[in-house]
Image 1 (cartoon, rainbow, N blue to C red):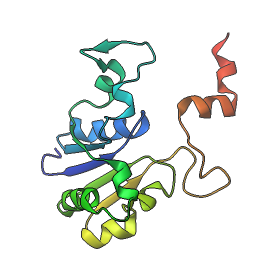
Image 2: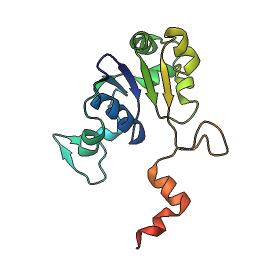
Image 3: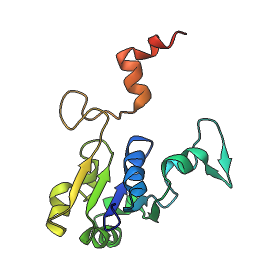
Image 4: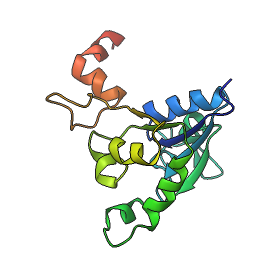
Length: 159
């Protein structure tokens, strides 16, 4: 269904990788951008379960995606443009970019909507965050367990 679609994924933990994985299941070519040491979820598993030193958590939520490892710290070094150029080249022919950092992080890295839109006018830019891009909690990291704790829904589990 999405065989001609190219997706760039700057995602981590659960929300973003599952969104990218869903597009991959539908046939999109998904390229996950990881730090040189690998995505956080490669080495973390809540159950401490690994297959050939790779977390089952990573295997579960990042299936059907290719990866590229880039030194993300290099992006913040104004003297070095090499890492940025790699991403800019990939973005030129991408259809979709998905990211789930806190608001402002992609812009700080040099990959905000305005910058990438100049490179690729047809790029669909999808930002996912725990608390949205405005409001009193916008800068806070967010994930499922935090939302459950904040809302009190955990009290409904009967324990």
